[in-house]
Each structure stands twice: as structure tokens, then as C-alpha cells.
Length: 510
Image (spheres, rainbow, N blue to C red):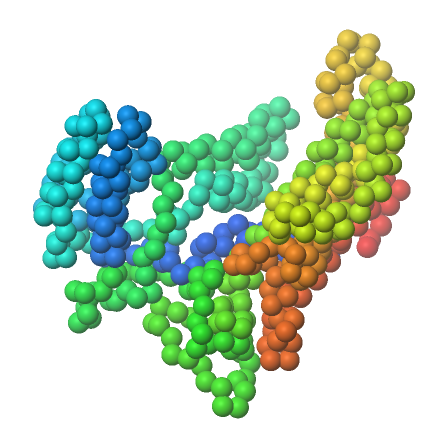
């Protein structure tokens, strides 16, 4: 394919690949995003997989069933609490799945009796449920009830539908990047349909199935107190393992060890008189040390990337959508619409986003959603002016005039013909905007006005080391380094996209 036959985006991509530093920066951003998306499989206090018995989960479900039966028996209204009914069904299912075949059969029968009782009128329902609760205590309250050895996936079960959507989307994007070249000889319409199917419909379908089939529940099992099946204490242990696979960093997001406060990274020398505390056999080393209450810094860095990157991406997505729509209307229709929108842009641009966020935080309290929304609602003016300028340049060209002559609607001309040719500078500005939003969130968290504990962010971790700068300097060094690399990478990618989208700079090397 000759250069003349290539599309604008293909030309930009070809020029982008010539800048090795920009490619490395884009790879670093992709790696950070991937680590944040797959954080549950990298840093977690739950096993990814184990085969064994979970008596803690069974006992907790048994107590929950008894309590829920009491609540439903005391409920005299015709309409039941659907959340309580759903929770009751889920708890009995958990017990039936964990119990031996001799117990799971009676449990299923008991569940059928509960469902029959719930369909009765209030008076009969109350008496029947009280009777069932007494039977429950007599038949299923013994600690000696046998459990079965099963394969379980605790990390997978803990995921919600949104996490599944992002994980599936990341895997589909990786597959498209690797295998998309196989469709190079297909028609553009077929490639567009395949891209839509792989990158949007597949993640949406998988997350919908997950939402419908995997119920949300709180897993409080003390997996780190589990033992190997051959040990002497296996009969009384909360969790018994035959086989277990832990994440690379076997620490929880807010798992504190007060006997391991301010432990330096594993590769640094300990101070004189400082000792590494005894660890469980399931715990690893603290590669980036611990904070002032004994939480693993690397684990919090991984999970903190979710917050910092999501603030940048979501906030930029909000103001790009607003700016594109407003700028397209002003640049295409011009006249009175352009006059009104230009005055609106001049008004909004006077509001400083950082101080407005401080005001909202003072009134409503720290919140990640407030930060994203305020950044999105105050930063769209730059995108709108860029899109307006591009539309003013493109709206009188031949392909737009031909579309008007053929009777195309303004919506079709704007979104299918003009906007794709005006998006290159928007993508450049959005890349710089992600860096600015991350820096804003980090600054707010450093000041204690951003994300609230225990949810970590890079700025929050940096703030926790402010009072321990000499006692635990790694709390400053590592999050500061990651913030610096992320913002620098965004700026390098943005500058390279700017140069690659300018025909006058194509062919030059950065």
C-alpha cells in the first residue's frame, strides 16, 4: 500500500513507531494499565486457586441462614425483603456446595421447603419458618458435619462485573493487537465490524453473563490461617488445603501487621537492631517495604494505580465527549450557535479546576467521583476550541460540500465525515490531559483532600510518607517515581502524536 493510499491514522501510526522513546513510553503506560486492571491476580490475600475444604465459610453460612430465617419469620408484611430472600438462598447454596454428599442432599431438600414456606400467606409463613428454624438448629448445627474436598477460585469469585469487563476488554485488545494483522486483506467494513465485535461486544457479553450468574458476596474466609491437609491441626483449621496457588504478592489491600511497621524493602539493609517479623508460610517478602502500620507498599502501589489512572482516563473521557460535541456544533453551524458557545467557553475557562475541586471537597467531603466530575466539567473548553478550529477549516472543503449536495443530514456529516478528520489534535490534547488529571489527583491526595482511606492512590501513599520522610523514605521515593514516569510517558506520547499528526514534521526524528 502506497503512502497516498494510507489513511490519516495509518500515517500517524507509522510515524509514531519511528520514535522509539515514544513507543517505550506507550509500552510503559500499557504495562501500568494492565497491572492496575489485573491487580486482584497480582496482589491479594486470597488464593487464586485451591483444592481443599473451607469450614469457616460453611460455619458462617450456617449462622447466617439461622439469622435470616429468624428475620423472615418475624416479618409480618405480605411483601418480603428480596435482598434477605436472595441472601438466604445464596447461603444455603454455599453450604450445599461445601458439604459432603450425605449432607448436601438434605440441604437441597430443606431449601425447597424454605421456598415453599416463603410462598405462603404471612401468618402461615411465619409459623412455618419458625418450625424450619428449629429444625435447622437440630439437623445442621453440628460442627462434626463432613465437608467435601473441592476446587475453588476465590479471586475469580470476588470480581464484580465492571472488573470482568475491563479484564476481558484488555485481553481482547491484546488479541486484536497480535492477530489483527490477519484481517489486513479484508474489506474496511469487515475490519470495522470485527473490531466492534472483539473490543466492545465480547467484553459486554462476558460481563453481562458474569453479572447474571455470579452473585456478589462478602468473602471473610481467613485463607492465611489455613493449613496443609497433612498437618495435625487440619481437622480444626478454618481452611484446609491440598493444593493452593497464591498471587505473586500475597498481601491484602488493607492488611496491616503492627509487628512489621516501617520495614524497609527486602533488598535494602535493615537498620541496626531491626528484625524481620515472623511470617505465615503463605506470605512473601515486602519487596518495597511496609508503611507506618505494616501494610505492604507494593500491594498498595498496584491497587493505587487503579485510582490514579482511572481518575485520569475517566475525567479526560468526560471532557473530551463534552468538548467534541460543543466544538462540533460551534464549528459546523457557525453564526449564532458559534457566538453563544464561544461566550460560554470564555465563561467556563475562568473557573480554576483545582480550586473548584477544593471548594467541592470542603462542602461534600473527599470523593473520587467528585474529582473526576469536576475535572471533566471544567476542562472541556480546550477540546471544544480545538474541534471548533478544525471544523472551521474542514467545513468548506469539497467532501463536506458533496455530502450536503447529496442531502446528508448534519449529524451524518458531522460524525461520519468531518469529525474523524478532526480527531488527531483531540487525541494529542487528551493524552496531555491524562497526565494533568493524574497530577491533580496526586496533589489533592497529597494534601489529604483526595481519595479517602483505606482506598490507596499514588498521591495518598506519597502523603503517608510525608511524616516519615527520614524514618521510611521509600514511602516517598516509589510513588513519586511512578507518578513521574507516568506523567513523563503521557507527555512523550502526546508530543509524538502531535508531531506525527503534522504533515510538515513527518519524517523527522525526535
